[in-house]
Amino acid sequence: MSRRRQIYEGKAKILYEGPEPGTIIQYFKDDATAFNAQKRGTINGKGVINNRISEYVFTQLQHIGIPTHFVRRLNMREQLVRQVEIVPVEVIVRNVAAGSICKRLGLTEGDPLPHTLIEYCYKDDDLGDPLIAEEHIACFNWASADEMQDISSMAIRINDFMCGMFAAIGIRLVDFKLEFGRLFEGDYSRIILADEISPDGCRLWDLESNEKLDKDRFRRDLGGEVEAYQEVARRLGLLPEDSAANEVVDLDSQRKKRGK
Ligand code: UDP
Image (cartoon, rainbow, N blue to C red; front, side, top):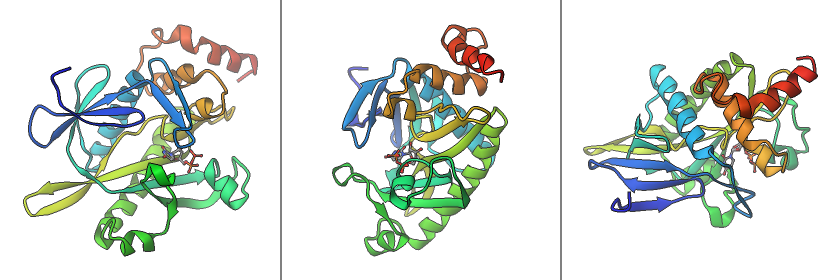
């Protein structure tokens, strides 16, 4: 690993040069940050779980025809992906009011939105990823009109698919963040889904109890982060029922106590 060239280190991942040109290795760390990295911590084993969850979700999305950068998982913490030029826009998809939109618009957390809402943020940590309009994206040429058409239609399809996937395992998909990249093929480029999809970048609530099964446990000091991430992986069928039994027993017994 030490001989590999590191390309970039982010808050939750490290990117290394891949084995062939045009490939990259994504290494998932246990580091967690919130509030634009003002809060920092570690969630033990998070990288391993996010690697598995993201592999699963990207593979499912590929099955419904969403082009993604995912090639294959290499080991517990690494996956091989295709190198793309990341579009500097974070795409936020919201089904239920939570997080920053509540503060911004005075909404109550948990209120369903009249319909699915897509928001865009400019990807710039120094500026705190400010909310932007499509007009900014066009004005500053961060993505073309055609690219935005692909991005928004993929975001809606991904949301539809993921809402169903999570509902089937008793989880409400409240909101999530997507990143897209340009894959260059000769003189042309096309937009594909990049980055990761995991409880780090999604709000996932238990359908019955509304218990949070995502990074809000860390953001809000609720505790039980590892157990919550494991619970999502377990329900997706990515952990053998008994391997995580010790860790999820608390959540399960709490639920049983509540008679659910
Ligand atoms: N999100 C993310 N990275 C970001 C900003 C947001 O993964 O830099 C995710 C976040 O986990 C949530 C959704 O996008 O699922 C909406 O986040 P929001 O705008 O409410 O901001 P937050 O409350 O997370 O600061």
